[in-house]
Length: 75
Image 1 (tube, one colour):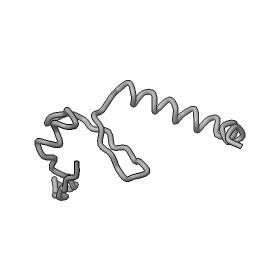
Image 2 (cartoon, one colour; image 1 turned 30 degrees about the vertical axis):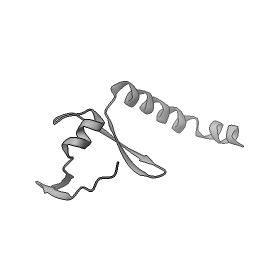
Image 3 (cartoon, helix red, strand yellow; image 1 turned 180 degrees about the vertical axis):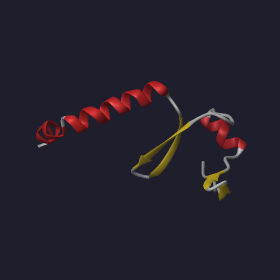
Image 4 (cartoon, helix red, strand yellow; image 1 turned 90 degrees about the horizontal axis):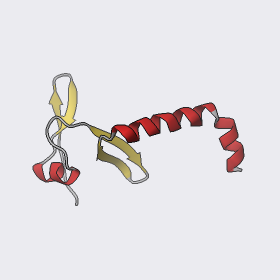
């Protein structure tokens, strides 16, 4: 699926309007929260998953704390 969206002003911020079809594909509706993910191909939108967000926060903390160990393991 390919869609084009336009950036619009929302107060002092900017936003995009998602079509009904995109909302249906994401299985979200007005008022739901989305997660913005950077991928090798660009930016992705996913429905917010609290369990996943908690796991990612923990993983980021571990990677930050054990950066030297992880770097050594990668060699």
